[in-house]
Image (cartoon, rainbow, N blue to C red; front, side, top):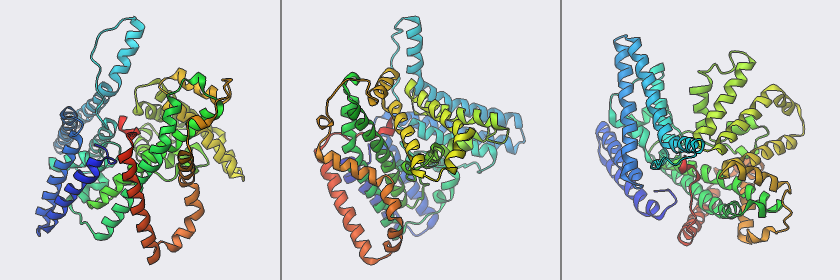
Length: 478
C-alpha cells in the first residue's frame, strides 16, 4: 500500500485516525497510550502485510531478533559479562547484515557466479521485501545504541515493534532513531495545531508526489525506455533533468507525507530534506539530501571508523568507504556501486583542495553549476538499468549520437509546465520568497489562502490519481 493510493487515502488512513482519536476518550493516560500503541501497531502490520503475508513474516522476524539481541546485551551488561555482551552485539550485526545480504544481494552474487561459471544453477529468485533497508537500519540503530549506552534497553516488546514498524516511516523513511521517539512512544498528546500542521504537510507532500513527480516521471520513463542509440543530446538531457526533478519530489514528497502522518498521531519525526538542489558543493548536497541516511552512516559507520580524527589519509578512506556502502545500500547493481564510488571520489577531492576553492569563490553560481552538473550526471547511473546503458546515455548527452529527433516527441505542454514549476519549487523559489513568507505566514488572510491552495492541490492530486496508472514510489525498491 502506498500513501498516494485511493485505498490509503479513503479507507486506511481515515479508519486509523478514527480509531486513534476515539481512544483519546480514555481518561487514564497510561491505558490510553497503551491502547493507542496497540492500535497503531496492528494498523502498521496490516499496512505492511498489504503486499503479502510473506513480507510481514520477514519484518516480524527482524524486529523480534533485534529485540532479543538488545535484551541479551542488557542482561550481559547487568551481569558484567563483557564477552557475552560483545558476542550479542556481533551476532546482531551479522543477523541484520545477513538479512540484507540474502534479500538484497543474493540474486546479484548468484548472477556473478553463474556468469563466471557460464552455467544456470536454476536457483529461485529471491523476492525483495519492501523497505527492508529502512527498517533494518532502524532496528539495527536501536541495538547499537543499547550496546553503546545511548539508550536503555526497552523491555516492552510492544514499544520496540511499534518503533520499527510504525507505518508512516516504515517503507521509505525517514530513518528514525529510537532516542528520538522513545518518550513519544510512552507519552504524547495530539493537539489541533499539530493535527492541522500534519494535514498540511501531508497534502503538500502528496501534491509533490502526484502532481510533480508522477508527471515529469512519465517523461523520464519514456526517455529511459527508449533505445539509448536513438537519443539526441537534447532529449537525453531532458530525460535526466526530468528524472532529477522526479526523484526529488518523489522522495521528499514521501518524507513530507510521513512527517505529516506522524504529526497527526502525535509524533515528531526528523526532517529528511533541506532543498538539496540549491547546494553549492557536493558535500553541501549530502547535508541536505536524505538527511536521515547520511546521519545514520555518519554516526554508525564514519565516526566508528575514526571519522576525521586519525589523519587526512584515514579521513579520505573513511569517506570513500561510507559512500561505497551508501551505493551498496541502495541496491545490488553495479550502477549503484559506481554511483557511490563517484560520490566518494568527489567528496575526497573536495576535502583535498576543491572545497577550499569553492568557499573562496565569490561567484557562487559557478559552484552551483558544478554541483548540479555532478548530481545530474550521477543520477544517470542511479536510473540506468546497467553500466553500458549509463555510459552510452552520458555519451548521448554530449552528442555521441547523430540524431536530430526533437524533444517534442517525448514531452507535451502540460509536462513542460510542471517541469518548470518543479525546478522552481525545488529550492530557487523558496530562497527568493523566504523573507516574504516569514512576514505573511502568521497573517489570517494567508492562512485561508494556504488552506484554499491545499484543497485545490488535493483535488487535483485525486483527479490525477484516478485518471493515471503511473504512480511509482522510487524508494520502495530500497
